[in-house]
Amino acid sequence: MVDAEKSQLRAHARARRQELAADHGAPERAAQRFLTMLPETGVRSIAGYWPIGDELDVRPLLHHLALAGHRLALPVVKGKTSPLAFRAWAPGDPMIPGDYGIQTPAATAAEIDPDIIIAPLLAFDADGHRLGYGGGYYDRTLAALRAKCDILAIGYAYAGQKVGRLPRHDGDMVLDAVVTDHAVHWFNKKGFK
Image 1 (tube, rainbow, N blue to C red):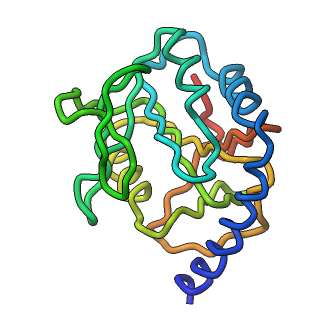
Image 2 (spheres, one colour; image 1 turned 180 degrees about the horizontal axis):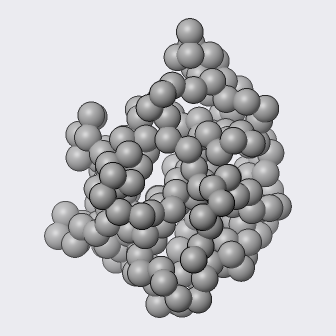
């Protein structure tokens, strides 16, 4: 039942996100919101994503973060049932095609465990639940990393991707925050220390 609901919501969320992507100023506005909430110290590494289709383009934020001296990483699919790995990346580094046609850092790039993971999404709700593409990669990844270290998971989305209440499984991981082009939504009281 939950899977069927999520599948139906994905189709609607994709169409909605496609409409929102017409706002070409949204990526820079979201980047500025993210930068204003980021503490000046204590964050060693941040994992972003390489945008596909009409996902909110996180590359302007990644460029700002690189200029500020943050160590960056991008996700790499290691297997259909495995958590994502994160390889070090900086603007201008060589990229290779990965699974699903997504550009990834070269295989020689160092793997790191980031302090912050910025995740793309199709929709999010007021409780911090994220609707992804259905592969469970971010849920597995967050579960594995949270079992061994203290990380923050931050969704990155257009404001219009917020929905009422998303259907959920027990294994669905909750985001700590979502940054949009209009606001920062905190779901976890810990925030930044």
